[in-house]
Image (cartoon, rainbow, N blue to C red; front, side):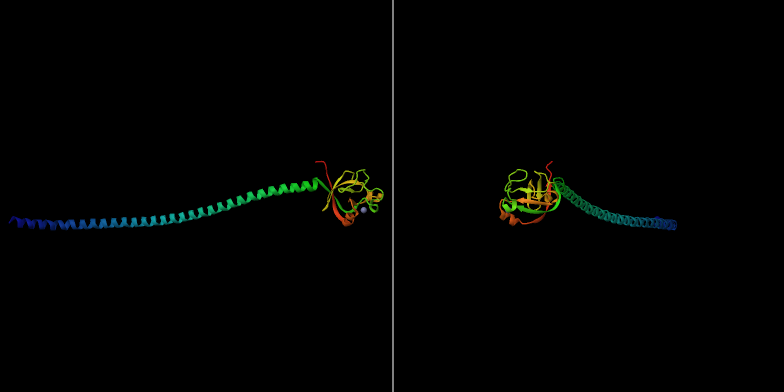
Length: 211
Ligand SMILES: [Zn+2]
């Protein structure tokens, strides 16, 4: 019965084998488990680290997007301000032109003499006596002409505020008025117009002809 014997030998061998192999296998298994655990722990740690970093990246992305939005908003504000500035510059340009025009009209073309007394006269006897339509300069009187003091030479163009533009062609009846007066006598064709005109105080300007 070699088989039985052999079986015994094999069994014995296995037993013997078990006695040596078991601790080795146990050791290997324990070793493998330890290694796997260490690896697992390190992988877990790495994963946690990766998660942390990816969270940080997400947070940073959010910040960047927020910053981008803020920048975009500011760009819009800047664009709006630039557009406003353009309009304001345009307005300033227009205002400057207007100021130039007003200055040109008021200071370089017109010179204020002051607030003078404005009266009226006509060719009638009570207004002009024997002179009628004849002026001191020789020019036949009509509406548009005035009598003024000596300081305003014949031919001087004047503006009477609210009334109009006139030319000096005549003088007053008295030397005193001609020398020191601050009055203008506006010529009218009829005494009714003289009466209607009455007596006013108005600003008088001389117009400079040198342009
Ligand atoms: Zn009259």
